[in-house]
Image 1: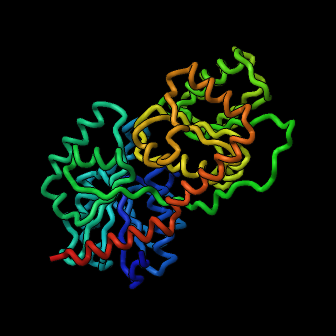
Image 2: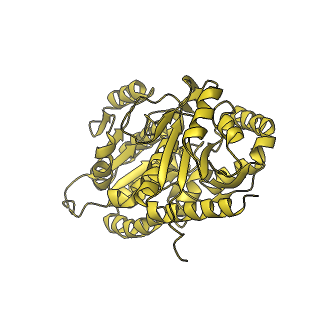
Amino acid sequence: MPSPQRERLVVGLVIDDNLDRPDGVQQYVLTLGAELTRRGHDVHYIASTTVRTDLPNLHVIGRNVGVTFNGNRLNTPLPASRAQVRELFERVDFDVLHVQMPYSPVLAGALVSAAPARTAVVGTFHIYPHSWWVTAGTRLLGLVERRRLRRFARVFATSEAAASFADATFGVPTRVLGNPVDVARFAPSTDEPAADEPVRIVFLGRLVPRKGPRELLAAAVAMTHAGTRHAWTLTLAGRGPLHDELAATVEREGLTNVELPGFVAEEDKAALLASADVVALPSTGGESFGISVVEALAAARGVVLAGDNPGYRTTMHGLERQLLDPADTAMFSQVLARWVDDREGRAEIAQRQRVAAARFDTPAIADEVERGYRAALDARP
């Protein structure tokens, strides 16, 4: 399929949250924005309270208040000033507004309502629910926004699970298109591990219940009791409210081969993943895609194991045998032990994983987003 036309577009990437944290939606906006800018488009970032000052064309509208939603700590905006919204559209003649969904009626919704008819409105739906109240709240939001949703000419969803949720709650047709990931930045290491080197198991993510670090540590304890042919280490990298609980379990069980190094900077993630013989990302649910899974697929020198939740099934398409139920501790420990003791199998599966990760490489995703923009512009009255 030929690449989309590259005539310069003026694009507004709209996010109700700030752009200071490296969370999934922020990564989507920043990665896509950088690629569109590289292609010659005029990209503007429209966000609520944001501290960083390194982004060109950043428009900060309104203020944030902190809330917990779908198992994540988020910032939700207070109502945007009508004067700010009006001034933005007077200063910038947008071809496309690309809104991250679900969105707040008081910021993104206000922008959608104020956008002139010549501006095409496109969305990307990012979430899959982690609890019943998230589903109920999103369904209510969809009812409130029913009229405004007619303004959207195209809506992407980051996974099959997110697409189903968008249909059930917002009633909008979507096209599944994963998150853009800079796959080249997560190239695997060319260094071969020594034969007597312990097998390295790595977890990288927030230390919160739904990411599964408890379940992984429980499986590691069970594997310790059962034994393996090869020595291994476990790195639980990240920070979060479960840190002290996990550290106490490590001490109580006498696990001298388990470490909790804390926060890993964005520039150090690739090296950590590239050093992994086994990457375990046993999220228990609430995942709409899995950027961390794609990064691991691209970088790991060994196997990537992931929680069998609906969002990860899009990301792990073709690798479903590497999905597991984190709550089944006995099975989880057996799967870990199997891969700890299978060096040749790890190397073989790593090749297939890199092919799977390439589906989400930023240029490929950006091509499809551009096509969506052109189609939305062509569909204007």
